[in-house]
Length: 498
Image (cartoon, rainbow, N blue to C red):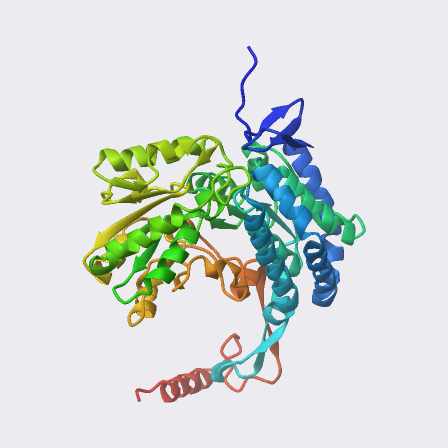
């Protein structure tokens, strides 16, 4: 009996990964599947070229990365079209994603020397005879395992920074978006004369596992908490360091003095862009009682105007199995007493899900506790900001979040247990190349973007250099009792209470 595969479902036939559009099922491409042997071969090629790439120095790598940035900018329409064809993402959404990715490539290339280059560090009085030096050296080969929901921005948030830091990269794109991953690698390879500085390996989860075990210097992973645990377990076998971004259940808080029109507009964008398939998407809103009803009305008015379809503002659900998760969360919310003011069970029409706005949903429901990853939004009423913060922080996730208000907005943002928070906007930190991006708790650890993101892809190397004889020799067996006594007197003098 021939197996029936839903459009968009990755299929492996005769050693090839077949990618199809999730809405119409059109084939986008076929790519050879990499097993452990092929992953090992990619790693061997990477190691052979790692010295060349590292030896270019920051100036040489910057030149190549800026050329790649310019190529991406000149071919943005082509890449956005590919994102639409393979993942179903609306072209406008794909375009904005690529624009953000280009910004990150530019920033990483221009700032790697400042952040990672050799520099002097101040010495301390008791070791003044030594000068202190710090630099960040590349890991060599970095493995990047990318997601399907933002198949350009998210991988480049690791790859561009890893390359700028002097590493070569082996990239395993999601099996749902292999064509996009191949395109990114091919365009960079053109610029470096065919050298395997950035390589791609295709396949399902076992290909990712093989990359974790291949002996790379570090793994950067983006995906679900379940898969993040598997990646971490595989990497633990070889003590390979990992950077994990594992999704979230981000909350938005609407205070009593918020601009409700601006809050509603941002909320609809944060919840429904990319059909809700956004790790930092707004899935929960806690609105203070005195503005709750007015805010809900404004959200529903805006959300119901969104078009749904292959060429609509809300495209298909890229991963077919996620449709049932979305359906289950809606059903559970309603069964527990929640109300659908927009959408509901009838909104689920595979491969599409129309925007759904739920209210009065219990905090122990699946729609509140677990990542839905679809165009579904829960808005619950709270007594005040303190209760909103308490509910927002109640889950083990901690990726992003949002606060709308005036007087207490910044203070409230600091209280949210999350890696990032936007004040009077949503998702804005993702495009801010100067700021680190990452989560806490079950949303993972480590950071991409910004100075911290560059440092993730370099080993801190500390060097001390003697520049004078030791006036108070401590680290030698030649020290005398008198010298030890002098050291003790100096410490007491330096650190006496003041």
